[in-house]
Length: 322
Ligand code: ACO
Image (cartoon, rainbow, N blue to C red; front, side, top):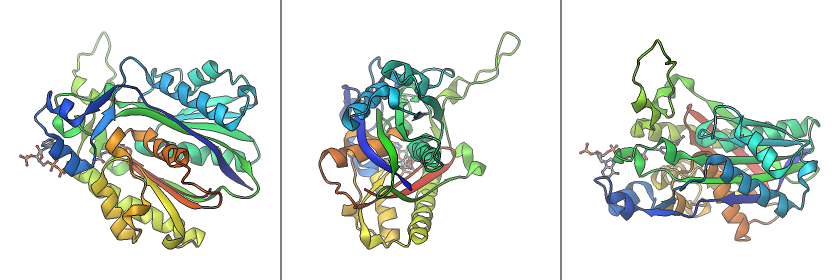
């Protein structure tokens, strides 16, 4: 028995912010951003919080799968930009879609979040505890961006994407792994909240924003993803030639180029849409997967590889028979 993706969905805010728009607020240029990252524009929410993006994605998933909300067993939202510390964003989704019989919780693994959430949902389904699940990556990273820091503000965007999954006797998830390297957690942080109060007076406001050692993240990404993909393919006994598409975390085209080269997988097999959305963290892989699916490029039985890395530091890779 395995778990199969039955439907994909995504929602991005309407407001488009181009590289030229960003060049009006910090000292940068379309040329610098496009050359170093591959990003041309991104969506930035104007008023819609993370739960709203997640709810729109969840509704689309149920509609596309032809499933009634009451029959849903599990909702997992991966996010590092939840509306609240409590409740979990998934609980808001549960209420808004009317999934009264589901259990809902969130997962925090930054840009690898969707991979972690899908991995967890897969285990519940394989164990026979649940029959189906909605798994969503949703982020409004714009909340954590210091719009005066050109080294980070050009990279990120807001959005949500997800999958409706069910137990399957045939095609589905073949092999997967998730991993963490907490030793280097501090090379990428965001949203620090200090234990302050009436009797303390620390100022940690600057730690609210995305703080990143770009070069170290770059090194981590190119190493961890390559090793993870090699392990998953070798465990599955599947060669790189049999892959139809690789859907990578959409952080940076230069990272994808290096991964493609090291793994010997042609760059054309990597599905890229970061030019339009930037890095949407946990939403990036499901938004890209949904775009591939909407274009009708996925055929039943195709071997698809999802792979990402993120804050934590974390990574996750999944081989799927579509
Ligand atoms: N516009 C113009 N110049 C810039 C900009 C900008 N937006 N940002 C930085 N620079 C300048 C720097 O100030 C520096 O100038 P200097 O040489 O005069 O000091 C120069 O460009 C080079 O800066 P670096 O930081 O060394 O640039 P680098 O080539 O490393 O590229 C980048 C930076 C694109 C961030 C790269 O390191 C990278 O892609 N890292 C990975 C980041 C990533 O993927 N993060 C997402 C993590 S996933 C998650 O969980 C959120």
